[in-house]
Image (cartoon, one colour):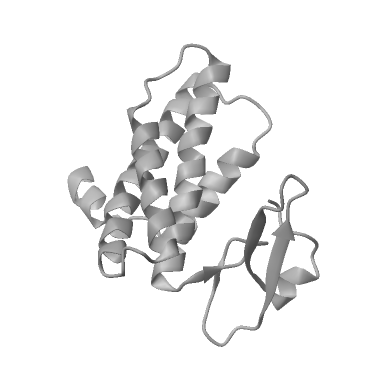
Length: 164
């Protein structure tokens, strides 16, 4: 088997896996090396390029006045803007640019889940499957009442608050 054959048989990561990878990158507290940052940039760019047409296709089948559709469309536009940003000189600036890509991946994965009806646990970032028990989670921000809402596995609720 050649490398080309192996490459074509590799499955693309699921939105859950993409979201988990982007969230992991955002949680890092140290600056990555240049080579590592370039690899992350490439991976996150590929994730965004895969998610955008999927979200647009899902949104096309729903009423344009639907709020989740409108929000998803805005975030697709933001992701496109981030993809056009040039590389930034220096490790701090480039890390911030790549973090922007990671934030777009997280947002697009969340929209993908909302538009397909899939739910992801806010604590462990794993999919909540039909039949699993879950709890509703709403987090109110002290800065203006912004809300992060979603679901958590019942088992995850006892492990502490979500990472976000």
